[in-house]
Image 1 (cartoon, one colour):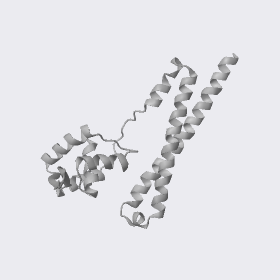
Image 2 (cartoon, one colour):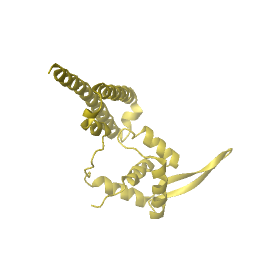
Image 3 (tube, one colour):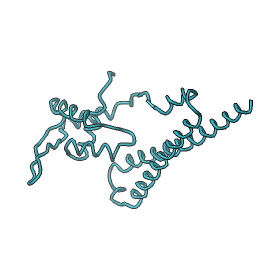
Image 4 (tube, one colour):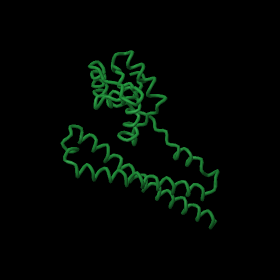
Length: 190
């Protein structure tokens, strides 16, 4: 299958849950799916225009007193069918682009201390993510509404993925730091 713009399906999925403006869609991307999917305004708005032309979403202008009007997008039946069709297809492999691994591949060119400093910074970032994931997990456990929501097992699975991934990355950073320190100590002894 040809390369398909996945932003389209992210937007359809979000609008299937609830109509919203471009700002609402971006906010949902930043809070609901940010750990595993990222979108920016510069990409969202052109895709929205194309989706409207394709008839998979509609737009209504909402006016509110004292505020500028805003465009609110709604998924159409055609859009819902397209989303379901995409959901039914196998997941396409996508190459990862991990800057840390790319830099680590060539890190022999910089001081060891600089590499370790960066690994420590990355580890701390993942520790903060892990704390946030665990906080959200507790909210899920303590919310009967969340557990009764139809999408609960899917959302919770994504949350567990984030927890496992953060735990792995923390462990990997610690192991890598120790490996680099050990190797550097051996080099000094020679």
